[in-house]
Amino acid sequence: MRSESRHKNWNEIKTNDSWAIFKIMGEFVEGYEKLSRIGPCVSIFGSARTKENQEYYQLAVRIAQKITENGYGIITGGGPGIMEAGNRGAHLAGGTSVGLNIDLPFEQHDNPYIDKDKSIDFDYFFVRKVMFVKYSQGFVVMPGGFGTLDELFEAITLIQTHKIDRFPIILVGTEFWNGLLDWIKKTLVSEGNISPQDIDLINLVDTEDEVLEILNDFYKEFDLSPNF
Image 1: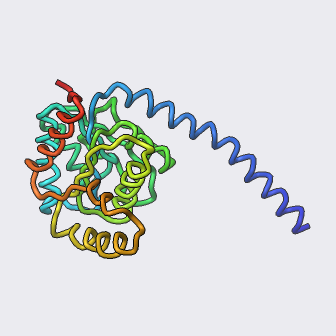
Image 2: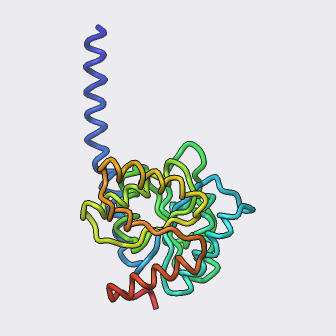
Image 3: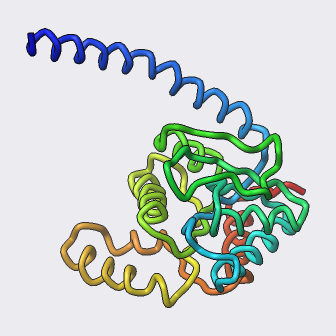
């Protein structure tokens, strides 16, 4: 009897997995259709737990506002904290403000600064990550936790392995990121796990002007144009 029960449950799992393919396809289709029309954008990542009165929240607002005023759109994860700050800065500048929200049991909810027609909800992290990479021409990475690190190293790996074209990866906050970069240099490079030139994929800054300078230099080098 137990054997029959286990067999039945396994068949149910296989059936559910098969139907999940259509849900995944639907998320890809919606993402492609909405994001293919937004123009050059920069993704801003960071902690959902950062509060409005904290330094990095305010800095993220200024960064998003500055780069939006210079013709770039903003893509965030659509939630609170740094994500809200990024959308808020884009909203203040009257530019494109995109939110790629993920369904989570805690922390995540839509912030009010996303353009109404540019908010997309995802159940699958991997679909959402494809959208970030495919439709961003730069990553601005504010202080954050595991999710932020996941998105950061995903982007670095894809560029390092030439799966996607190179674009700027900008870490904001010298005090926050220095320890990680030191470990990468002293451990990963010295052990031969990455090449010394891989470090060049990462920029470390502290101000909104530095972020904009890196983005503009990249666009000039590759003869690209923002949304003007």
